Image (cartoon, rainbow, N blue to C red; front, side):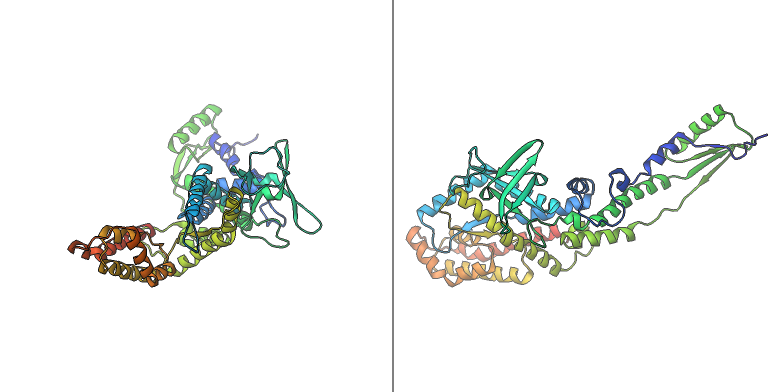
Length: 441
C-alpha cells in the first residue's frame, strides 16, 4: 500500500511565486555573464527606464549642463546691429525650445553614446548642403535610426536614417552629431549604460531579489500540518486558511493538524548596494553624493569633489556644446560672430569672498561719485557672476563712470545711499543660504 505520509500540496500562491523567480537576464534575454560584445539599443533603453539610479544620474547630468543656461557676448562694445542680432537669437531660442532640445540631445548621448540634431531649412531635399542663414527649426533624431556613411578618407560622407520603413540620406551639414566619450577612430560614441552594463544587470536582479526577500520575510512563515491523510477538500480549506494569514508564502502538509509560525531573519542589503553605487557613479563621472542625493543630517562630502564635477560639466559645455551652439546660430544667422558664455554653476568659498569684495568696492566707487542707490544696485547686480569678469569691471570702473555720466541723469547721493554695501551683503547672504539648503546643510 502506498503511504501518503510525505504527500504535500503546494498552495496556489506558491506556484505563482515560482514564476516570479525569473530574473531580469532571463526575462529580457540578457546574458547574466560578462558581455564580450556591445549590447543592443533596446537593452540600453530598458536599463534607462527600469533602474531609478541610472535614470537619475543621466537626467541629472544633462540638466546640470544647461541648468544656468548660456549667453552670447562680444569682446568689444555692441553696436545697434549686434543688439538686433541678440534679439533674434533670443527669439530663436524661445521659438525652437532650444534649451530643452539640447538637454534631450545630452540624454540621448549618454544613453546611446550618440545624439543627433537635424538642422531644418524647410526644404524638401535633405541631401543638399545647408546654406548658412537658412535655418528654420531643429529636430531631435532617434539615435538607433542613424548610421554614418564613411568615405575612404575617413570623413563622414552622409548620415543615413532608416526607421519604420523610412529611408533618408542627410547631407553632413544638416546633422549635428554629439558624442561625449569615444575611442578608436572616434566615429561613434560610447554609452555610459554600456560601460556600467554588467553592474546595472547585477543591480536590477538584486533589486528584484531584495523585493522578494522583504515581501516574504515581512511576515512569519505559517506551516499547517495534519498527521493523518487529508482529503482534497481539507487541503483546499487549509490552503484558504493559510492565504488569510499570509498572502505571499506558506505550506500545507498531511498529518495531524499542527500549526506553527517561523520568523525568518532579514538580510541587510546595504553593503551589497554600496558596490553598485560606486560603480554607477564612476561610469557617470559623478560624485557619489550627487548620484544618491544628500540626506538631511549627514555630511555632504568634500567641496573638492563638487568643484571637480562642475569642472567636468564646464568642459562638456565648452568643448561639446559651444561649437554646437555656434554652428546652430551660424546656420540661422550667417553673420554670427558672438562668443558663447556659460553662466557659472559652482563657486568655492574663496571665489565667493573675492566676488563679494569686488562688488562692495565697485558699489563704493559709484556711491562716492554721486550715483543714486537704485542705479548702483542695478549696475552691481547686472555684473556677470564671474571673478575674472568682475575684476575687469573693477579695473575699468572709470569707463563705467564716464558711460553712465553720458547716458543717465545723475542725482547727488543722499544719506540713504550709504547702506548700499549692506544691501549687497544681505543679498549675498540670502543667496548663500539658498545654496546651503540645496546642499542639505
